[in-house]
Length: 314
Image (cartoon, rainbow, N blue to C red; front, side, top):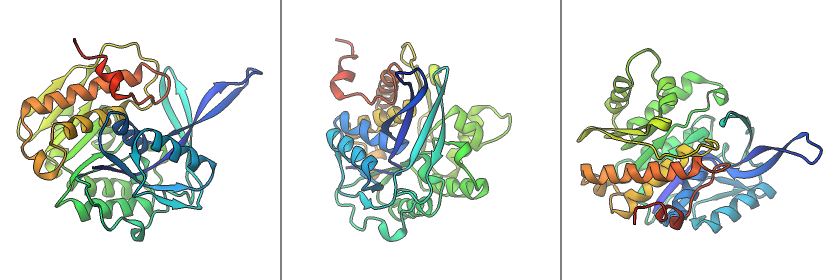
């Protein structure tokens, strides 16, 4: 099983009311939640570890997870509120305003960490759940505890406006990257992590030097580049699509990559060590295909397996 560890929240999506005034429609979301949803819809064996409220928004989160074949075995149910993220769109680009104080996900404690991960072979971390204490420190503790035995993938998916203590966040991010096997990061996030005018190749190498064996750099309509300690660089172009909005693009890339890794038998610590160049290219192609589907839809539309299979050449 792939266990996605981190936030599950409600995105408040802007829409027009009948009167023409701006209104917001609640949609389930969050970077880690979306990745889990995408994996479930693509057919992978996947679960979610997070705190989910018993409020009405939490009910929506649980319903969507179950409908997308995501296991709730490791969910920590809570009376605390659900995190809300108000989405602002500008030419299809999303920015966010978060309401997260004392939320079910943010307040995860070390004592809430699952003791027995059973069949879990891969752990995925990322998003705003790595920002705020105590939950961020709890997730870091889980990654460090399991890194010797489990495959670890991290996607920071940085929301700079959400970060109150930048030095603490940067230190935590460095720690979790150092125990990760795979880091997926966008070009914008890479430039935030590694400030300065160095080429992206040098910045990606800095991440590799921290410990992971693979860095996946997404470049929007320019595709993605893998920086591998074993295979060097591998570039995969993006899908040719009419972009509607980019909400969930990185999450769907994560889901596509991890599902392909899982389907090919590489989604474990030992399995990943046998990954070859052709298989890595295949996983990246799947990731860009899934991301291409999502950006062609309104909102974070994680595709189902049959929708992706319909895009494959006959």
